[in-house]
Amino acid sequence: MGIEVVVEGLTKSFGKQNIWQDVSLTLPAGEVSVMLGPSGTGKTVFLKSIIGLLKPEQGRVLINGVDMVNSPERDIMETRKLFGLMFQDGALFGSMSLFDNIAFPLREHTRKKESEIRRIVMERIDIVGLLGAEGKLPGEISGGMRKRAGLARALVLDPQIILCDEPDSGLDPVRTAYLSQLLIDLNAQIDATMLIVTHNLDIAATVPDNMGMLFCRNLVTFGPREVLLTSDTPVVSQFLAGRREGPIGMSEEKDAATLAAEQQADTAPLPTGPRTVVPQLEPSPGMPVRQGALRRRERVMSMLGQLPEAARTAILDSYAPAAGGARA
Ligand SMILES: Nc1ncnc2c1ncn2[C@@H]1O[C@H](COP(=O)(O)OP(=O)(O)OP(=O)(O)O)[C@@H](O)[C@H]1O
Ligand SMILES: [Mg+2]
Image (tube, rainbow, N blue to C red; front, side):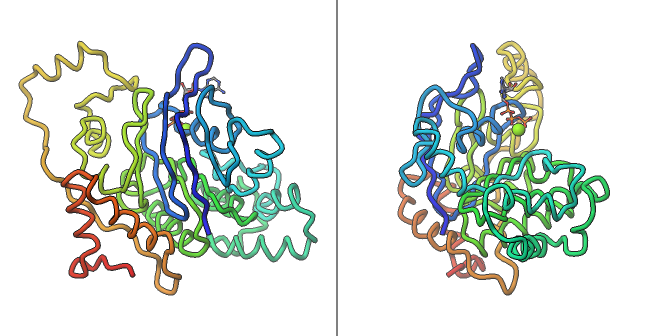
């Protein structure tokens, strides 16, 4: 079963440049979470901080009692074995076959026999739908296949926490839809805690249990998917609608003058009001029930009172039997 990841008061700078400050959130065990945010807001830096590859100046990241920021490096290395990582660019070795790429973490971090390695690698290759391509070099397959190979490699060490950095970048809409389903099926099969960084609004709307957004050096919000999907916070609604109008500009933040001018301009009012929350993806037929979804239901129902009205309504709708949203 997945493991909870607790982030407390995390602040990260490079020299004088503050990337984000005082970020606190909990990735619930075995649930799928998505982190949104304009380019350059530090999403990749956040993932790297969670696994302890980058060191924030303040705060803690607690996993099974180990603080990935401040614990001894030995404990951090040990805890890192719980992770599966899928990088933004696939990060495959160009001169190695897909098989060898996917086998790499096993050969590097375990003393398993080649026969055992072969069994595990072929199983993961099957999960991501790459059977038959294992002998190919990364340069000989499509970008979408490389993405899936990166995912297969992230899976070989039986991760309990999976971090995916823009798994959809460079994929066409159909492949992105398959990838979304794959992520949900994977979660159903291994019950790992998952954090996905993406710009893709379809993934954001259909895959995660929870969603957060980084903007302007802060975590704008993090919580059940319905909270973001119904939010009327300007940055959130602008991002989710993919609009130019709003606080997010080309260089992340618009300057005050531009914003004021925009607000003065006599343009048509922006669409506001309740947004519809599309149903979350269910595992494919034949897959196990998502344990994370069952736990989430309990968790979210117990926090209903603290949530905004629109989110509460959306949650109740999604769990109402008539909506076809009954999961248990
Ligand atoms: N090792 C580093 N040293 C110095 N600055 C860094 C380092 N890594 C990242 N940065 C800076 O941190 C900021 C956030 O980078 P990051 O890659 O996390 O953004 P991102 O949200 O992942 O963007 P994108 O959506 O384009 O991938 C950038 O300004 C980047 O230049
Ligand atoms: Mg990034």
